[in-house]
Image: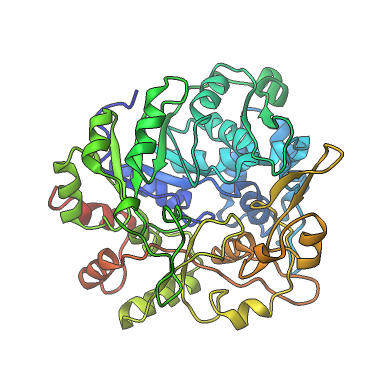
Length: 473
């Protein structure tokens, strides 16, 4: 049950660490729900440590991890006090249905550290945002966040029907898992984490966080509400303009002149019907203005979830040079965000800011060696002998096809994992000299950022964004 008063503003969980712990902490201190992105936090921690742990934040967080032996193993493996000196980042374990102990431990540590830092020194509420499409990461990541006392878990990019049970099981100290979508499967595949096996006598008492399901249609909210086993504590109702991944249009995919999917009335949630479900809900996607906050609250919503106004704030996890390029485009009126139906290996449309020098440019992406090494978005598939393999449409075409993938599925696909790491200054520097380029996701509605820029020509903080959004409501 969501504790009262429910937040009016949810700061969205964006990209890989764009919704940084610094941003989430600032929003939580302002009395609203600050959210860290829960994507690839194992890689984020490993790479920050290899860069010398700027500010000492990772080491400080891990000093509070319940199992100090586990924390010590992470530091021994990844911490480089003097940094890398331009050497490539050390590889870390990739996701599988049955992850290695090293992979589980790094996930626990990475998610713990980000949430712990966001919650350090205050009693405001902090959430973590996961993607249903990255199923294999979820059990260990959720446990790591819960070890740090996360208050909310949010999940979209799919139908998160198993998350309420996962959180209940982990809170009770029981093994918790989720069913993994395996292409061509002849049996059920489950990925799980056992808190006792992972932490032993160091396992503390855990509290179940609130769970908000991110949905795009009122019918999905009704479906999830019907059964207590899969019922969330509330919803974020996300419209097509929202950043990151979005649900494809219902029916046959049609594209506009720019190549973006065309959405119609069937793709919009009826907020009055969502209100009739009876659970708290927030509205996202082109709602980042004070007037929009007041409008949705009049329809029964608790408030709004906003991303882009926070992604462009001075508390954003974006690398300074990346954020500045976006701000220049915003000031000049040239910033455009496309909803690319092909970019993401998941098959979901994905918002991509059109910025020079990033993978939004075909020539820039074409110069990149085609490979998949972070592997967060790869799909598991069942081989003829019943074993499980893994493939990604953005890996080398011949490799993907050899694994049984369809050639047409590789067309236009981009390696989002490496691009999103580059957005926050943690892009890989490869031995052949190639440096990964950014690929920036934002929402398509830029009214809120434009109005904030008029008020704050030198840029605005996350707290200033919160204060502005609350001016009418």
